[in-house]
Length: 432
Image 1 (cartoon, rainbow, N blue to C red):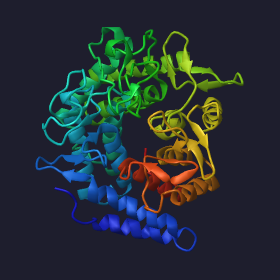
Image 2 (image 1 turned 45 degrees about the vertical axis):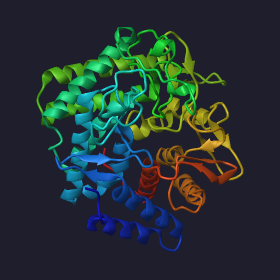
Image 3 (image 1 turned 60 degrees about the vertical axis):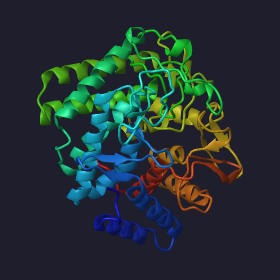
Image 4 (image 1 turned 180 degrees about the vertical axis):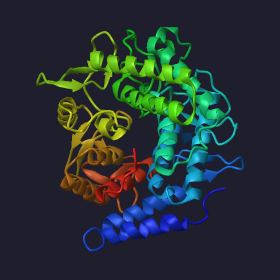
C-alpha cells in the first residue's frame, strides 16, 4: 500500500523548511517540497507483511543503495513519528530479506515475478531485477539499520533475518578479499542498447587483482563495471559499517563471533586502503585512488554516484580537513578527473554512466554536504534549483551547457540528496 497523503509530521516539517526559505530562497522551498513529498507519494509501498518496498523511480525495482538514500532524510522526523520510524524499519527488514536471498544482487523485484535482467549470464532468481555485485549494496542496509537506531532508538529491525543477513555480508566481504576463490561471475550480452560497462571482462570475473586486504567489487555504485576490482570509496564505506556492526553486536545484540569477524575485516580493509588505496596525482601529491588492483596500479578519478571519494567525510570515514582528503577533493574537482565537466551553466562531476558534459545533482549535493563553507552550500543549492529544467525536481544528470537536456525524469535518490543538502544548510542533520 502506497501513501495516499503526506503524513502530518512531514507536512509540518515541510512548512518549517518553507518558513526558513521565505524572502530569500523561495525557489529552494518549492523544490524541497516537491521532492520531499514525491518520494513518499510515488516510491514507498508498504507490504502486507510489515516490510517496505521502495521503488527507485522510473525503473520498477528496488535498489538496496537507492532505497536507503531515499528515506535517510526522513530520519530527522522519525524521531517524533513512530509510524514513519516503522516504515523505515520495514524497509530495513525488506533489504535484509533480499540480502538473504542473494547478497550479490543489487536490485530486486517487489515479488518473485521474474522481471528485470533475466537474460544476464549469472545466477538469476525471480526475486532479482539485477545481479551486479557492488560492495555498497551491502553497506547501505547496515547504515540504515544503524542510523534508524541512533536517531529514534528503534531496535525492531535487529531481528533474526538481520543477523542472518549480516553473516552473509561478512562471508562475502571475506571471500572477496581474494576474488580468485569466488564463484561469482557476471556477463551481459552487449547488443542493442547495452554498453561495455554493463559486463565484466575475463568471462565475467573482472580484471585480475592481487589480494591486499581490501574486498573486491565487480561494479561501481553507478552500476558500471570497475576497471580495477578494489573500489576504494566502497571499501571506505565498508570500514565504517563494519564498525557499526561491532557496536550493534556488542551493545544491542550479543554475538562475539560477529564482532570478531567484523573487527578483523575492518582492520584488514583499512590496512589495504592505506597501503594500496593512496596514490599520487599529477602534481605528485598524495590522493586517494578511486580504484586499485592491489599490485600498484590505481585510477585517479571520481564518479558522481555515492559512495565516491568526495563522500568520505559524509560516510564517516575521515575528517573533511584531512590533508589527503583535501588534496583528493581538489584533484577530483579539476580536469584531472576525466568525469569533471565545466560549461556555460554549471560545473561538477559526471559519470561514465551518462554522456560526456552531463553532471549529476547527486554529485553536486555531495559536494555541498562535504563543504564547510556555507556560501558554497548556498551556491550549489542555487545551481540545483536553476538547472532543474522547470520541473522542481532533480534528475539523474544534465548537460552543463544546456540544463534542459537531462537524463531520467523521475529519480528519487537525486531528489532526496537535494533535500538533505538544503536541510544541512539550515543545520538540520541526521545523527551519525
